[in-house]
Amino acid sequence: MRTFFARRYMRRIELVGNTEKVLGILILLLVAAIVVAFVLQVGTNRDYLFNVDQEAYAPAAPEPADAEAEAARRSTGEGENPFPDPGLEDWRPPSRVDRFTADNLYVKIDGRAEAYLRFHVVGLTFGMYRHEGNGERTVDVYWYDMGTPANALGMYRAEEPPDATPVAIGHAAYQVGGAVFFCKGASYVQVFPRRTDRADAQVSLTIAERLAAQIEKTMDDP
Image 1 (cartoon, rainbow, N blue to C red):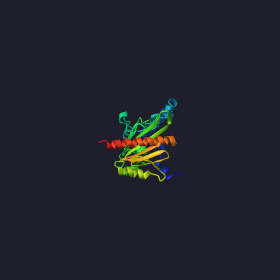
Image 2: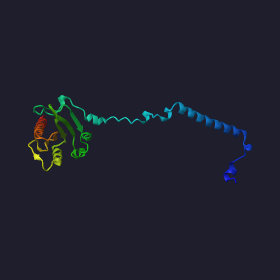
Image 3: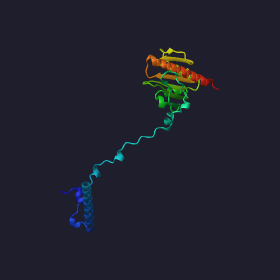
Image 4: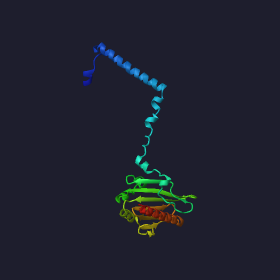
């Protein structure tokens, strides 16, 4: 029994016109040609199917570093180095000085920059003191320009721990874990020794005293 579709669309071969027969043959020949071409392509060039375009799937090239961040890392010349000689045997002042503004402070102290911005920080100067005979002995100095003495003291008080040991440097200072923190004028300075033994704690204290004297000299200059 014929279905609805069979009754409607199926015709006896003698009712199919010559034009339809020719078109049908051409379509069959075209399909056969496509199949033959595909088989030949696979047989003679397997790379066509199985090789990966390395350029298409290569990882994207890293974007160039932020120009502002790179500029913040620039090193000043020796004549522009604001860090004084520590006056200690085998210890040398920073050979590289990095400067940061309020806009790119996060480059150096990511995660803590917001606290300084609340106290209207102007910029940060960073340098590392080194011991010539022992690469493990270094002292990092973070020298913040807070714009005004009130801002510097406010930031200093915000970070001062209750168990800090006061020291006589600048307008206010303390030492904890070998590190020294002080404010002088609009400057808030942190001096961090890599080692926390007694010897390097004393080195940090000496560096802080030299820095405070340097800041006072700058303040006195007309």
